[in-house]
Figure: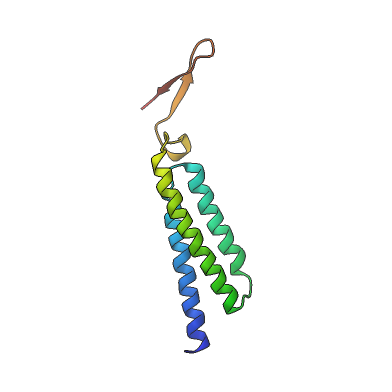
Length: 110
């Protein structure tokens, strides 16, 4: 096996891992966790993309990424158990809060 074939194989695995992490991060029920996971994935890949790494270092990063993916899969399953109302930034119905003497009543407008 030539060195270029190994390099292409590593690049393929890295792109595949990147897509898998982004896909899995969109499975979080909570907006903040979902956006954090996406941002963290992009930042880590962007940070390591510009580095000139040896083959062994690349493999170590891919293995670490696979562990992160497995952890993220477990976390997304758990997050599905504790779903909350969607936030306004997620595009749900808009509304306003009103109430007297400290009481708040949620009114939705459609």
